Length: 321
Ligand SMILES: Cc1cc2nc3c(=O)[nH]c(=O)nc-3n(C[C@H](O)[C@H](O)[C@H](O)COP(=O)(O)O)c2cc1C
Image 1 (tube, rainbow, N blue to C red):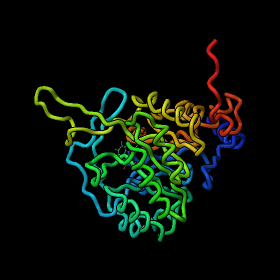
Image 2 (cartoon, rainbow, N blue to C red; image 1 turned 45 degrees about the horizontal axis):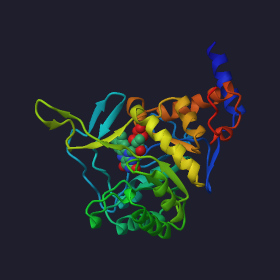
Image 3 (cartoon, protein in one colour; image 1 turned 90 degrees about the horizontal axis):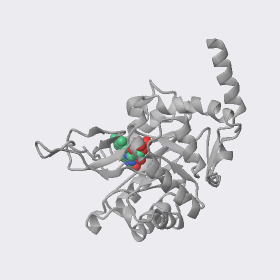
Image 4 (tube, rainbow, N blue to C red; image 1 turned 120 degrees about the vertical axis):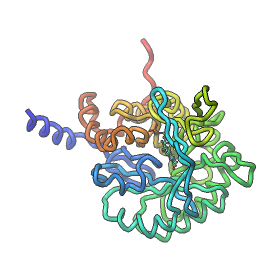
């Protein structure tokens, strides 16, 4: 019985084409692990076969190392999770010197997630990465406060988006540039269009939703910080709609993420127009979540008579009968 199951898996994996094209970048399948939930990849290498993934996105990298926010940094909520990690990371130079040489040994697409507090910060991080080998591309996290504009998020204003993406585009001459949008905007299409026009090769939709939880007895936040970001299955329907709205208005490839746990979740994101997806919070409960999804996809697709994962993308919604 076990042999039969393995044979079935091998046959269906061969029969279904999972490869996807994101601009100039070809991925062996549409599953990537999401930034901030997969460390620098290396922490997961003893648990997950990194070479089976479409790729992964590193923890956000900044110009200088950041210690991050006080504990507690995570708090479980119904069907989701709050986090306030404070963008802790080793800084871009230590990433290049210590992590990248080991990552190069793996045959998977590694995207560096980049953030900053000013436009110059973003440019400097990319400048350092451009001189290093072993990256497939960059993902710009624009859900960050701009210190020169009173803490207004880069990603909340089309003119700020144009500015930061345009500057990053100029710095990133060697590699594809994905821009990760904030979901907390009135009209995501305006932001997506600004990013596309400023030179983004793909849009990642979307980041976490600002949220909070407190203990009314003590009046204290459940996190070490007053607020955090909500992720997990609770956000899936909200983000799925954002991907759908973005797809209808924008040509660039979209990478969808928010609450993905099952193969059906992946296929829903592809159906509304994503070319690939990322898996975040699910890796906390099951570190092998992304690899498990790669393994599950062929069977689910074959059962739906789909032999190329790209055939699902962006089909118009069927009429309700
Ligand atoms: C603990 C934690 C840390 C994160 N850190 C980053 C980060 O450094 N940069 C970034 O762009 N997104 C970060 N994210 C957001 C995720 O990449 C993802 O956009 C979000 O969690 C939604 O996907 P999910 O519901 O599958 O987790 C983080 C999320 C979590 C839960």
